[in-house]
Amino acid sequence: MPNTVLHTGLSNLLIRKEQITSSQLAELTQKASKNNTSFPSILISENILSPLALANLGHEEYGTPLLDINEFDLTSIPEEFLNRKLIEKHHCLPLFKRGNRLYIATADPTNIAALEEFQFNVGMHAEAILVEVDKLETAIETVLEDDLSSLDLDSLDEEGLGDIEVADTERKDEDTGDGKDDAPIVIYINKILTDAIRKGASDLHFEPYEKKYRIRFRIDGVLQEISQPPIGLSARIAARLKVMSKLDIAERRVPQDGRIKLKLGRNRSTDFRVSTLPTIWGEKIVMRILDSASAQLGIEKLGYEADQKKLYMDALAQPQGMILVTGPTGSGKTVSLYTGLNILNTEERNISTAEDPVEINLEGVNQVHINLKAGLTFASALRSFLRQDPDIVMVGEIRDLETAEIAIKAAQTGHLVLSTLHTNSAAETLTRLSNMGVQGYNIASSVSLIIAQRLARRLCEHCKTPEDVPEVELQRLGFTQSQIEQGFIVYKPEGCDQCTAGYKGRVGIYEVMKMSEDLSKCIMEGGNSLELLEIAQTQGMRTLRHSGLMKVQQGISSINEINRVTSF
Image 1 (cartoon, rainbow, N blue to C red):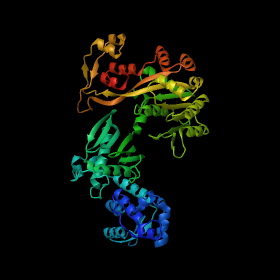
Image 2 (image 1 turned 60 degrees about the vertical axis):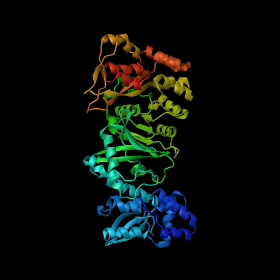
Image 3 (image 1 turned 90 degrees about the vertical axis):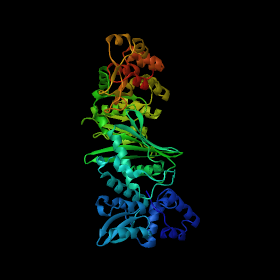
Image 4 (image 1 turned 120 degrees about the vertical axis):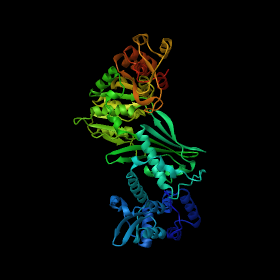
């Protein structure tokens, strides 16, 4: 947020009160200017004063009235007073008018220049009201974000971005703008976000490098470069995204996490999960689109084969036990779990989830956001769930022995537990629990079903073309002789204006392992993952590879895509 740091009466007051020295003042002023933040904000971030102490100091010295802005209705601010440029420039917020006086929320009552500029802009006398600086920052971000969301984003086109080009594209880390180019930045970023939604992207990557800045979308699991804005805009883009995410724009040394809710219409909005990471050339920002519609797909659309779907539905119908979904990040585990929860979500059941973070809100499900800093871990949340008369419990991830043991006890005492682990296959999930320290008899008596999964790109129905693959090659790829004798057409991607490189959308491929007496016996005898896999296959389980080849046989995906996402 652009802000000009001035030596106002506040700095002189702090020196007179011996809160800072003259040398400190120079250093703090320089930092505030470099980080494009206000002088009161830098006082707080450097732990010179607390927000409340700073506000009380101004109140006692100058008699400026104090206000808790958290109790103020920000929606009551008249729109004609919301001048974005002045608000961002002076870090002040007009609140209301009485008679011919406009009352301005500020953390620095001595900033006369700000009051005079607002006074000139609105044509009435401006009065200062003291507000704690951290609360003021939050209020400003809220007001400006609401103002941003009212833009008609659908009407934007490439011509509306012409002003994004700047003359000086040299790298200046300290430059986040003086306000004159903010409107094009706002329009540009919102067009990027809405384009990502329209193209079905799952993630957005904003990446600064030494000589270029690039923006990539992950579409159908593969990253694609979308834009290369001028490198000189790197800091402005990062600052804008952090403001929208309600993050500290002055903090660039450590990672931060936040969320954005982007309104695209009266009844349509999309959530983004935002993560910042300091790199040697600036802050990389990754945004994940949290699509609540994906949780409402229905199990029939996820890609399960008929026998795999029956195993999952049978496990969900059990009153107790543990269902584990495993796979790498981005393999669709959350959607599989949410789909199961939607099936179970009825008036008669009490469902609680512990997630880090809560990605999609489900009405009727009690969702808990894990907060490690506050001591709210998966284990502590799970303990609380068991004291709240649960029927079904979902644990976002089993990360340690403590969480695993509590989840297993819950599964053994009449509760249905759903959770995830990060392993490569269903068989490895059992050995992973054993390696954590869970006793074999506890695993055997609690785990009822394990689903390992991946997401493969679907071939575009408009342009996929047949591919001639010799029988010997099909055998080498893993097709059985019976599959080859049945006869099927292998398709490959072509590419058209309806798809991306010949693919459109994704489909799940699954490895569904139901616990049996033989598997339980092998676990209790300390069997390894290879032995467990062999037993499961003799009982009819298909590996991820074989499930993927079935998608090729059905004409849903290509050989190259299945090779990309499964072991070969």
